Image (spheres, rainbow, N blue to C red):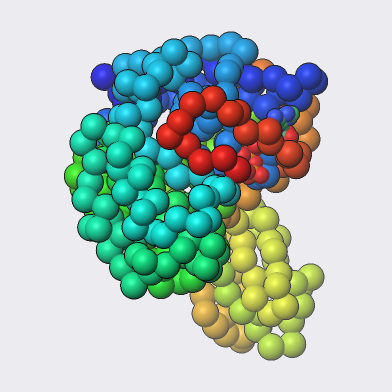
Length: 337
Ligand SMILES: Nc1ncnc2c1ncn2[C@@H]1O[C@H](COP(=O)(O)OP(=O)(O)OP(=O)(O)O)[C@@H](O)[C@H]1O
């Protein structure tokens, strides 16, 4: 049985359809990354799964329980790392991690967790003296200490320096290796690519694609033909290609589904001119390219009533709106924002 089953989930705030009929599953031990622009509905979805927001429709099962009614038994089995945690500032790091450990029946060793997140030298420091990135690491420690079966990570490395980010990734990979199911939100495509077994892309409250990071978009992704313009030529001089041409100064990218044909046209054109095509490469679009296609493409009218794109389909989306979330206030253990 999947660790998470979400079916037809809906949450509306007046006219705003924050989550508008979203369905997906997360397998036991899987890492799923929820992606989407600001206001797409990621936090709302995650907070419903955490049991911190109510829903207006649909069914949700997490670890076999309904988060809305699972109570303490449910909260003891999950870990939550929030985007912006409010801390008990006068505690020391060690005191706070120990305090949280006390909320759970089978906690990890607080000292070990502090070490794992790289705060050993700050164990005795008061929380208010920590830097922003160090507070985020403390967040992570508090999410881990209860030995959760399922961990929710809301933008877990925002504000981390590059080495702290890699350390956090290693930590998350370690948890995955131990069989922890992880649902994370992130705006970093490299993070999703690195950590996630699958990514789900939300846009304006709807799921527009779900699949492995390398397969998102499937055959529909096409290829990217990249080269530098030969000297003395402009993009306007290029021959007609089947793919879409984008020039960035002298660098040109062609997104194409007919790579052989476009490559042939292009190299023929260069040969005729006695020109060289330097840095000519053929590659797959990055997760970021595919993501931007998904969230930037046409207006909302194009997606009404659409099902999430199966891998291999063309999918469309446009960006969501900004948000001012009012975080639900039910239930401990959870820090207030
Ligand atoms: N408590 C609330 N009251 C009213 N509208 C809300 C509330 N919470 C969220 N919304 C709206 O719901 C939509 C989805 O917001 P949500 O916070 O889920 O987006 P998100 O994908 O997490 O965004 P971000 O990347 O900025 O964190 C937005 O339009 C937001 O303004």
